[in-house]
Image: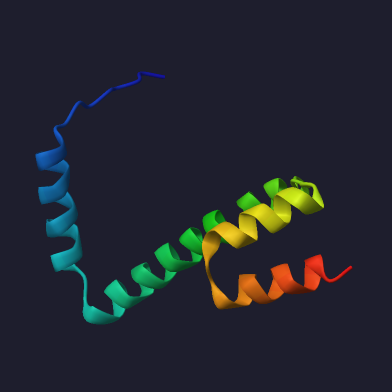
Length: 85
């Protein structure tokens, strides 16, 4: 088997992509966009789930300090609740 490598510049690739997209009908373009959307969804929502098992736990005093520093209303309410005891 003979293997061939093609080297192209990014500008050439852009021209090829544009030519390819323009050769498609509107329906074909929509179908292609849907496939790209599905692929992007898999990348964004399936693969990163592996990292959700990692959580960081901070002390109560650090939590109060962090929430106090944000100056958001909901965080101020949380600080009040955390400091009641």
